[in-house]
Length: 462
Image (cartoon, rainbow, N blue to C red):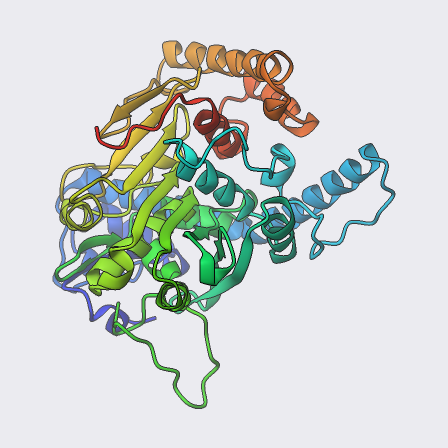
């Protein structure tokens, strides 16, 4: 990549761990002229005089370099762990089958931690939780392979599977975004069209790096957006967000997330005058979901936006600055709120990217629906502060007390409340480990499923 790739932006800063050697890292510590540093793509005249800000960039680059080095080994270990867990799971169910990673029965680590795939049928269509319950389960199933998703949508949910998308990232030359689209009925009669983006897989350190990366672009009329999520969603080199992307003859035809999914949804809406749209995702999938809706507004896709029923995200990280937040809220939350951002206590991802949270940097927007450790739901505009597990002795003790409470709560809900909440052996094992290692289970997808199911109602007009 060259700096010409960012000419669509009038202000950008993109960290380049692939070009960060000892000289570049030392230069960051001792020189404010970051525009002359090969490890930072920005305007040549850019200077950062604050040593603390340069130190934060230095440490972030070190972490990203480590994650890049670990990407191959961690992916290999993760594939082996998932394969072994699927094999053990087959044996426990009395099936002596060799796991096939592309089959409709093979589960990701997320699917093994929480085996639930059925919708909670006790939640009626008129229930305020209905859309959230459908979206949280779609966000969970998005972690699985295409065959698994197709089987669940068609046979377990009795809905219409439309398409699975494996999408190209123009900046990383890799497939970094996955999503699927389905309808609650046959497309011609559908009342809901749902777009679900996949979050960061448990063993994909390259995607962890994207979640931690504070790189951003300032796009005229839109605001400053998170660079890694912008890339994954389908931004184009040199052009950013053109309204249409045309295939160049002689080059491979690529699928870009925003454009392919937008066109698929528009096709359904054009053939069906009553269908409404839900967009959802967990973690980085939530970031892609809210950016997808925001870029629709940027392109003035009124036909889609007017029929947007809601954007439901779970554990979503920050995706933009105050200008982008105002743009999104003006288009998604007026005249009524349509962006619902769920956060569970202790989930670290909604606090990413870490660092400054002034209006010039990343900030949250939309209604924050926060679950505490007992699944009590409260409404905030920002995530409430929590003690760190390592910053103080009080935080150290509190994190272990919460882990113990979650273990007891998991057993109680499964055996004292309902079989729907019964946790499998993988999750119970991770709960036990979490008493010693706070932070496990990873990223808490199951807690969002539980929180939505146990909430008395989902406030939408607070």
